[in-house]
Image (cartoon, rainbow, N blue to C red; front, side, top):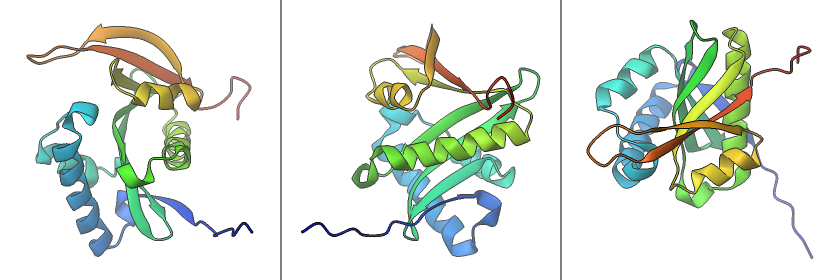
Length: 165
């Protein structure tokens, strides 16, 4: 016998979170950058605080439990929504959480009049499989910054279809 458990996935921007959710998200962000800094890179705490203040952080909840977040901002001069970080808790890393976050980011890109969403991902990370699985295209590459440079792929997708989604 198969039992189906209803799942409630919701995505919210930072300004719509209540104070307790904001505190929890900041703790999760600090934890994520400590345990997964090789995968998501390291940004100073000020980066989180600044992006939060600008409402450039989106979080995904599963049945009321915060399971992930994304940090993105529009580059109006290029018409691109730049994804700086995306992270889902290790115990919740199934495709639907990341897909839900990216779907929300695509909507944010359309609202900001950005025609494309892009993410730079180190070539040695399993996250490259995620971007391919959700329909992003690997466009080009560059060397990363820092002492231990790594090759990074640029993944991108249109925020809307050419005919207007």
